[in-house]
Image 1: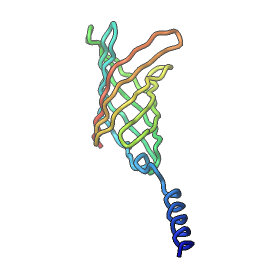
Image 2: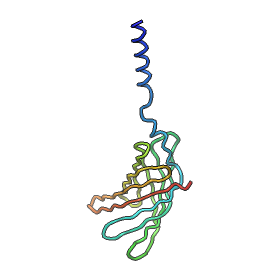
Image 3: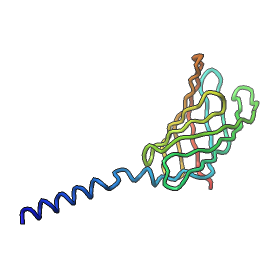
Length: 142
């Protein structure tokens, strides 16, 4: 009887070890079209608004896509279109980390995911020491 209990305990423990421990990341779906807005803080304030497209394979934590925005100077009101690629991953069910390449140096985005809404901050630090940062949000629209 005791040997049987030991075997059953060992089988139960082995079965538990074979189960994935973090299934939430695989269930995070970021794929779709997002309405993206951001603000760049600093000596000149710039507003960005446009569309972010995320492509993601089913069950994958990683994703890629592109961002197409109009960058508008808060000071002059002048706007210009900018676009670039993005790539990143979901660190957990509600934490997303991705880089956007609107220029040679990436803008690192760290966001909280709640339903169809991403909110967070971004930062860009160039080799020459010039940096920029700000906040952003994105709402899934498709």
